[in-house]
Structures are given as structure tokens and as C-alpha cells.
Image (cartoon, rainbow, N blue to C red; front, side, top):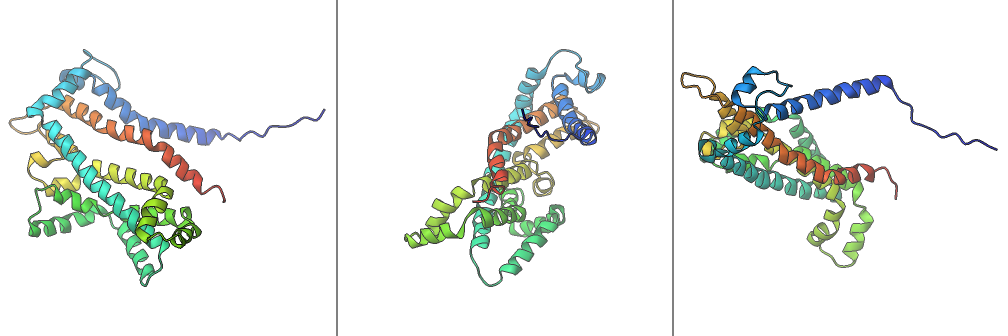
Length: 287
């Protein structure tokens, strides 16, 4: 009888230990946030961060978060959703159209556009915050949702991702076949290209959503009226109430509000991860 040896992947203890430490480092703040959201204000300040203490107050904290200060948290949540839908959604649409065009059409100045995009990726957003504020101040757009939405529409990194993905995901023969059948360029884009670009579009959309949802510095300098704050700036203002002569600390609401803030992002990643997996595996199979 001939024995057949089964090849098993080699295990690295060092790599396992490093990844375990990285997992702990990643999950520890989330565990602290979940545990702290179950505490009252007094228990939050008097008990260790990673241990439960006092009465279980998670549901009471959630109710108080949504009702505190006349329910301003709902307004901040609505503002954040507006900025995400309009800003991140628009950024994804523009990046998809521009990336597809750059990948599949040849025109004069294409290399120059590529250089500009790479340069834009290298510039940190904080470096452009003050010039953007001065420009929007001259236009009279500060303290309005447009001051957050319009800058969010520009996503050089998203455009670059779509460009790279479209170059390999959409065969030129498929586009030529559609043109031979009499389809116009716009119809080809919406009926042929978009179907092939779904994994790349989802990836860009998730990056744009996370960037807009967690955006703090731009709203901080653009907005001075609490009614237009997103959740990031609003929770920061609640946290700032603990200082000063008329201090009103609401740390338990800040922690609970922060926990509620990350729930939509976690749900979005769990629901859309299959598109990421298909996109990552698409390039590993040759047609």
C-alpha cells in the first residue's frame, strides 16, 4: 500500500503570537467601551475600566443618550447620515465614473492626471482644512451642510482604487462587443461596467463611509452651530462639559453615544464583507 502524505500548512509560533497581540490590541478598546456603557456615571468613575461595577445601566444610558438635551443626539445622528449619504455616496459615484474613464479611455494628458491623483493622495486632509475653510468662508457656506458635503465628494484614493480595479476587472473585448451591438458609452457604463465593478465600488464606498462618519476636524472648523454637528463633534462637546465653572459631566452618555456610533459601521462591514472577499479573489483566477 502506498501512503499518501497530506500537506499541512506550516505554523509559525512567532507569527501566531504577534497576531494574538494585535488582536488583543484591537479588541481591548472595544471591550472597554462595551463594559463602560453598562455603568452609571458614578460607577464609571469609581470602578476599573475592564470590570463590571454597580447596577447594569446600559438600557437606561441608551434612553438617556437619546433624550438628553431635548434629543440632540437624534439631530447629530441625522446630520451624520446626511453627510454620509450625500458626501460618501457622491464620492463613490464620482470615483467610479472617473476611475472607469481613466482606466478604459485613452486621451491626451492621461499620465498628468495620474500624477495629480497620486499627489492628491499624498497630501493629508488636515493640510487642506484651513484653506478649505477660508474658501468656504468667502463663499458664505460655513455653518451649512454643504461645508461638509462638498469636500467629502473628492476621494483621490477611491478614484485610484477604481482605476486599478477597472483596468483588470473589465476586459476590453467585452466593451468592444457592446459597442458592436450598438450600445452607447453611457449605456455600456451602467449596464456592463458597473456589474463588473461591484466589489471595487463596495470597497470604495466603505472607505468613504468610514472616512465621512469619523470625520472630526473638518466639521469642527466649519460648523459653529450645534444643530449641524455630526456625532463626532457633538460627543466631543458633551465630553467638554466636564470642564469649567459650570461643569456638567456626562461621561456615561459620551461612552454610550460612542458605542451607538460604531454599531452602524460594524453592521455595514459584516453585511458587505462578501463583496470584499469576491474582489480579493477575483485577481487570483486567470480567465
